[in-house]
Image (cartoon, rainbow, N blue to C red):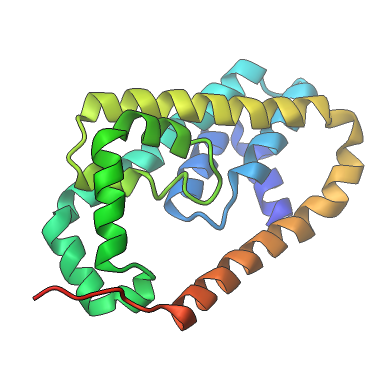
Length: 202
């Protein structure tokens, strides 16, 4: 994965960074924690502009979040409830989980979207309840962009500052990224195996 990401960043430039960050949101096992630091490396070498890297990463990430927001809007609460009733184990979510998330989100939508974009693992997921809750599109895009801009900026800056130690970073980033994917899969399998719906609705 590491070599592939490096190739896309080096050959694709800003569109490549935006594409990778879009895919990171649509297909989370491609982590932004690898993409943006590598883009920062490229900026430190002079092949890309640091501000351009952050803006490209932010644009791609927001576009990916927008996809999931639209999915949430299309699904709506009714479809989500039916999916949970039928496939709650695979989704690792109960109706009670949905109610709690919906109540919390109803009162803290702006904060949830903003902070959610700063937290690994839920960066993508937070867009779905925003869509389900019919959050105002303008508000969603503003808070998503603000949170994403901070996240991509921090990661790109870290990569920029570590450019001189690229060889050392390269040696451990690939195994770490594979380990992260493995942990995500293991956590999902554990959730499926231990899933116990709190209640069912008629």
